[in-house]
Length: 477
Image: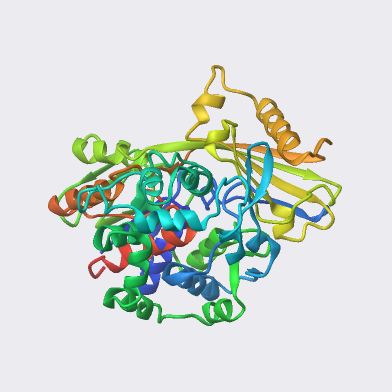
């Protein structure tokens, strides 16, 4: 069986890795751009001792997805930059709310005192869950994560805890994002036991819970080390882009063809074991296609032959994000140590959050921060015509840095990236939407597998595990 992978982002490269590992046969990965890695991009300034990340910068080692990624990192022999749970960037998470920087509670003590921006002790939210009536949502139905949290824990928790967290994870609006995106097990606990805390307690004696714990047995030595040393997260020497670059090197050394600047224009199928990919100058027949493309791109490729599938793929929305990296020569500018801060949407600011890169990693005497803007609210702040220039976007970011962090001086160096349609949004009904897409593929016997951020989670661990699971489902090549 001749297979092909569409997309050279981290999910497509991972799919290639697992195809090679399972079947041991050369194949081809097609990437439309001149580089691999997708939204993962690291920019080193070694003479000055700092680097910028315009996409993800850290990976969490937790659970089966984390163990799976560490197994891959170990195979590639990549040097790790771990951040233990005792580190300030792991312990300290902040909000900018009500015109001040608020440190979120990181110990049980924070549950019994009033911590800004909350007006009541957080234990009151737990009592609210215990005393709230059973779910009003019909079984197996979905709702927004905002609605769920407001019902169970109150409006303040929804506004100042969950909404900014969703901004940080997917740049989305918690009022639209499915509760199953982040809290599926908690949602199911409520459905089954009538409350979140009740469900968490009962689940400890539930066979399915114990079975899930037992599932994490394929532990790499690196995963064991991460557990022993209590890593909260980690990155890689020379930036996270070393992961896709090393994956490409690993694959090409084993006769896998990674073709850059190779944009697929059409994808058609003829039975259960034949697909034809159309490129600029040629048609390429294959037996199976693993697509890691964004859903909207795959929709265009399948529209002519399968308009219904295309429409379902297009029903997964995406958002644009502006990323502004700023570097200052002075390393004493940040008044707080931590990973960074998030800005709740109720503050009505263009900023989603600010990451304190130089608190996470050694930046050789520099202050380095990354400002994230737009997301679900991109059109509101930056949707004018003509679109804002890089200078105008940088000016907005610096204005917010002055307002929030009190950093009045201009940066010595900066980068501005507008990432168009970079993060899929798991809006209410997303799980059923993805099931419908995969059921369509199965019912029409299309030689097509889907992996990547549009379907099984938006994090690096998620898309790598998505690739592995889809390859595991392939028939013998």
